[in-house]
Amino acid sequence: MTIEQNAGESAGSKPASQTLSRGIRMLEILAESGAPMTIADLAGALGVHRSIAYRILRTLETHLLVMRDGSGRVQLAPGLVTLARGVQRDLQSASVPELAEVAEEFGVCSFVAVWDQRDCFTLANVEPRHGDAAVIQRPGSRHAFNRGAPGIAIQSALSAAEWSERMPEEPYRDASHEAARLGYGVSHDEVIPGVSAVAAPIRVPHQLPAAVAVVFATATPPAPVDDLGARMVRAAEAIERALGAAPAHSR
Image (cartoon, rainbow, N blue to C red; front, top):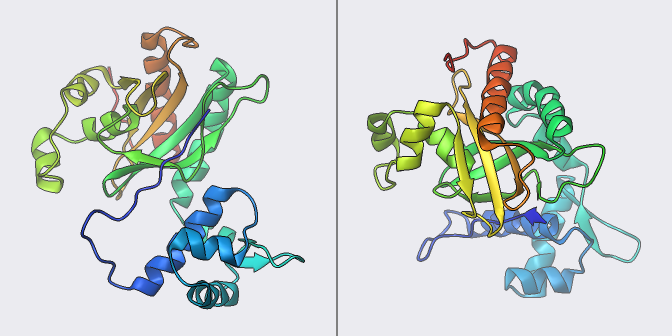
């Protein structure tokens, strides 16, 4: 089972640049598909005429973000990797060793999520090498900030007053008050029925807080929630130390 949800444009919103928005959406569609697509399929997914889709495609090709195979089908190109290297690079580098330890220790997928406007965005993940994790959180997947343990953990890193200044339209969750007390947040069946998560906040220097988490089938937790929470707190502390921050999770 994978957790994949893309945030669409809100009702009534209009992008500042329609062409740019369509180009970004084309990249998202290709990422979601997992396989090369025809121009006709892309045009249909975008809801535009094939000639418009072709012009967008040619622009993305020029910047090495997409490419076509021998049959003319379109797929993502290596140029995207170059762009991605600069995104939260320090946090990714600091997180991966700890994510690997957690994944092997519990036999579940571990991941780091960051605050992306109204969403939690999965920045990096590690799957256990031995055995098949029942639930996988893929890099690039996102879900609404007000659902799931990563959002609870990230919110708990801020006081209710700080949160109100940043996001006055979103309430400070009761679960976030509890997470601030415990050092970790827990969610059951909030993002996907039958799926749970445990997450702890990462205080990133000069950036918004992030979260380190594990995700698993609610019916088969890999360990007691308290044990998972304590491990997530230690993982967050290790990542903070790697980033040069003084851990704020003292007990």
